[in-house]
Structures are given as C-alpha cells and as structure tokens.
Length: 208
Image (tube, rainbow, N blue to C red; front, side, top):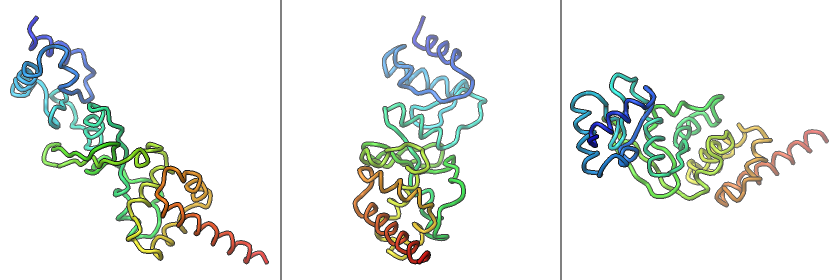
C-alpha cells in the first residue's frame, strides 16, 4: 500500500471530531511523502488545514483557537495553559476578579513551558508565550489562574491597584497563594503576605 493510501486509511479510522498532526502520520512514510499526501488531501477537500501541520476531517466544525493551540503544543510535547493576559484587562478596569473565568476559546496568547513561538490559525496569529515551570504550575486550577493573572499585572500595575485586586480575593485564596511561594515571584508573595497581615490587623481592630 502506498504512503498516500496508508495515510488516507489512517485518517478514515480517526474520530470524526478532533485535530490530527503531520507528525502523527510520519510513520507511514518520509516527511516529504507525508507532506505531499496531506497537501493533495487538502486540495481534494478531504481534509482541512487549521494551522501548519494541523488538520481536521473536511466538513467538521472548525475548532476553537484554544483547541488548535492545545493540539499544536501537544505535538511538540509542551504543556499549555491559559495566559494571565486573559483577565488582566478586566482586572485593570474593575479591580476585581470576574465571577467566572473568560472562555479561552478565542484567546490568541497562551502560556507554555519553554521557548516562545507563534503560528497562524486561519488569519489569526496564536502566540505560545514561553516561560519557566512556575508559569505553568497548577495547570488550569483556579488558584493557578489567579496567580498567573496577578503575575501578568506585575509591579507596574501600581501598589494601590494591586491592593484593590487583592481585596477582591477570598482570604482563603490569598493564604493559598502564600503557600504557593515556590511557584510565585518574590514581589507577588511579599505583596500578598503584607496584604494578609494588614487584613488580620484590621480584623483584630474591628473586634476590639
């Protein structure tokens, strides 16, 4: 069986929904042969290219940018999480965290461990912002997202604004951030700790 027929058969066996990569097809032939096969299948409208080296079966709903970014990161063995930038604008405007986290479906910047890279998904450029282990620690847990959001704001947000943001967080959450000291920058840990001490002092004062 030719490389082209093997790839076509392999694609037929895949679930109707989902993204597959050029890399996953390389066991059926040389990289050049696989590229030629996928190019031909796209031209025949048998599959659709959603990003470089990433495809879906033709006729399937177009995946969200988040799903494409996840697939792209997974192809290269990278862990991808939502970026603090998603809520930074909200925090700057409202001074508090939203009741529910923004849907990452249309986000164009994500956090990964390692180097920064970018690619086109349709006409949108998606950036995988590189960083250290601390940047992706905790995955998509609420506390991890809150730490990344505060981290993204950075010191440049100003002490007054940072205090307003911290005041919007549950005290239990603030204590949890303190316990995550090894996964946060020193300035953020210190700011949260000082805020908690101030909170405790105010609480004692209120009951005296």
